[in-house]
Image 1 (cartoon, helix red, strand yellow):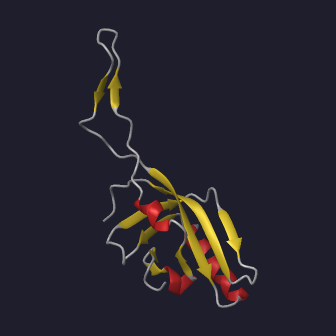
Image 2 (tube, helix red, strand yellow):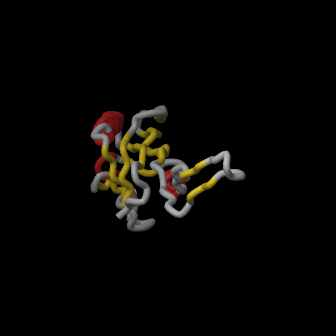
Image 3 (cartoon, rainbow, N blue to C red):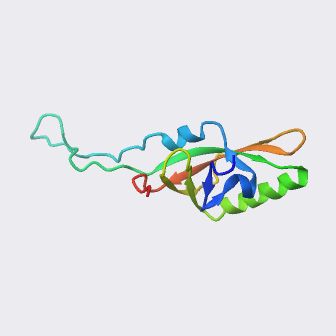
Length: 139
């Protein structure tokens, strides 16, 4: 709720009624993939050479789920639209102060979007893909 999730330095719940959805922390906390190791196959040697001394982490794509709560149908629609507009800026900086001090620098991809809303149209769930270009940069 209030203070749980900061997006681009703003309290997501106070501004957009947005909170973390299912498996949100799991998606952020998952490990990042590695870039392929440098390899060389030579007909003069058995097997192949693999250089692991300079291993590097690759970018990653992750799916984040959010919930949006409004006090009424019009309030819900306004908050949803304002939240989408924040995502459409492209750069999304996420911080969860109650978990740790890590800052996640993400790019909103707007792919694989799912959306559902309650019958009374005051609550909804949204999930979409994001990209973390450099998982080692988390001030």
